[in-house]
Length: 305
Image (cartoon, rainbow, N blue to C red):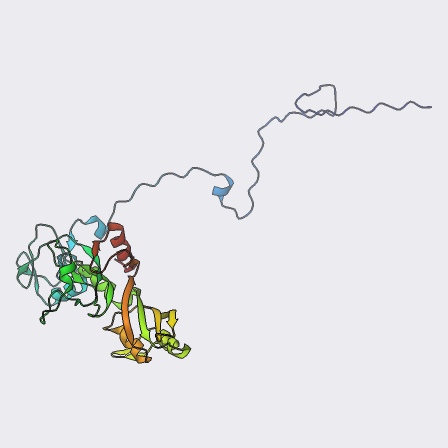
């Protein structure tokens, strides 16, 4: 029997080369090449390199100018909104240091003498408060008929706080008062879609057809109302009344009352619960509070200021 030739033993560890073994694995004599990048892949992905910090560009434009636009200065005085101030400028009613100005791009500094109709502007601090207006009070600062007005419920801050929109004498609820003319204008304008939520107690129990009319729009004074959100809160057969939650984006005079009258369910009691993110909850009738900076910033952001 022929003896089997012994097979050469393979090395398990390449780190221990054997000069007499033809099957040994030679150690690499050069550094391995990096893996070839895939076609179409950007060079930055194949060999990542730290990005060099970009030099900060100097600020340019209106933000770099410490001066204030003329129509903004007028609005900040509290006499009107920015849009109305632009009208005053176009009409030649505004002077800066004695010269009539009609250019919208004019900027002014703190020491400049700005006048509207010859009356010097005084830049005052802006305040915004919310009031829970009680019934029996007129939404105005002065009433020729001598009826009670909201001014008795507003704080004395040394400035004139004007109501944003109106609530009729028999309606209670949330009312915003401010001396920021531009903010007041945008909150009241339907273009900015600021939600106003009401709770109404109406006579009778509206059927599905009446509710659909309220939601899609009804014809009242001044034309058809825009779509509204209407929900039934409760219906009382014994008293023949219904509680409705109505959310609108307009602010037409006596709008909710006229809408309900149009579907033959007149309002018995009406209260405004919310304007945008602001709610009346926590305020007693006739009580008001100052808005915090964050609340004002949220309001301004909501209307694009």
